[in-house]
Image (tube, rainbow, N blue to C red):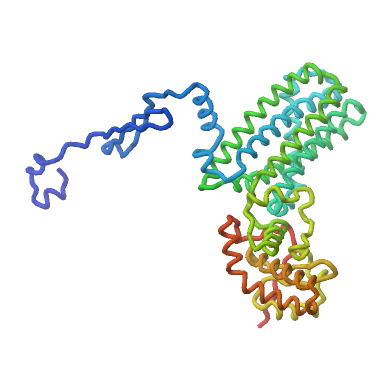
Amino acid sequence: MNILERIRGGGDRAAATERPPPQPEFWVEISESVSRLCSFDASGGGRISVKVIQDSRPIHDKVVDSFLNKFFPSGYPYSVNEGYLTYTKFRALQHFSSAMLHVLSTQSLLFAAGLRPTPAQATAVSWILKDGMQHAGKLICSSMGARMDSEPKSWRILADVLYDLGTALEFVSPLCPQLFLEVAGLGNFAKGMAVVAARATRLPIYSSFAKEGNLSDLFAKGEAISTLFNVMGIGAGIGLASTVCSTTQGKLIAGPLLSAVHIYGVVQEMRATPVNTLNPQRTAMIVADFVKSGKVSSPAELRYREDLLFPNRLIEEAGSVKIGQPLRRVLCPGLVEQLRATFPNEKFLLNQKSNKTYMVLEQSASGEDALRGWLVAAFASEIERSGMGSRDAALNEAYEKMERVFPTFVSEVRSRGWYTDQFLDGNGSRIAFAKFQ
């Protein structure tokens, strides 16, 4: 009996009327030929326990479900965005071929140094050779983080190209043993930069697949896939190093083939990734589609159209906008106030030169501000091509048109899954106007 009951006058009589502790509740859940006995114990802290009492699934289905539970996020495929399976397949191929290349290149380095290691020794020593150059790579790449945020897919491909370049230098090192330090050092330096770039782009790529706040689960399962196929690749690499690739000539034949598979895997992996942040290329593509068809493409619809090798190309239908140039290079000082009057209360300035439109953003400009500027540039370019009025008149008319359509346009952009709070322009130049009292 507690004190509160005594104060209320329950006395000892309450003890006789106390209810017995609740008994656990049981029920059976049946799903896809699996029966599970579930119990809820209110007196034990409200815990639910589940026990499989019958599983009539074929062995194949059990193995597949076990694999999915270990290497795919919970709730797959409903908990991830479109393209995750394609991304995962090519990620596995990329890591498998990369691990094989790593074993063969490490054995080549040791051959060049005058050693004759076994494949197992090459695998063990590879960690020492790899880690030493990461520090130098971090120093070189430290100023490029904003560019990697803007174009994570292109930088991820570049990381693997650098890795294969370093591997190629290691492969040829036995052919010039007198230059061992120079060749091996340059190769490891390239691979060190590749490691940093690959790690820096990992988070934005995983984030593009997160659908239900499950980024940690995605990351954990993605790393599990990488580890599994790295181990398999190391095993296959040891087998090659012991047989057809035991000589430098064998490595020079197998190396380019494995490298081609490696690069192909990472390119397809990145093409399947639906990044939903706004950068110059994706913003231009969204605006171009809207101007041409009145529709807004989703990240999944744009992913295979992105130019991953030359992401800075200009799109004529979107106004051929070039962004991030210093203000002093694209505008005469006398034009600044005129353009600020043309675009009042906006966080962008536009100036057309020859066939390009230069846009300069203010420091606090968001993705919506960039979309507004891009729409003005696209409409102005369209008006100019039709031969209606002067350049200044086209800008004014384009700005008025943008104001009319922007609420509907930006609402559609958000509903299609784009993140408009930020605009990722890499290390592009921005401006901040000083306020004088």
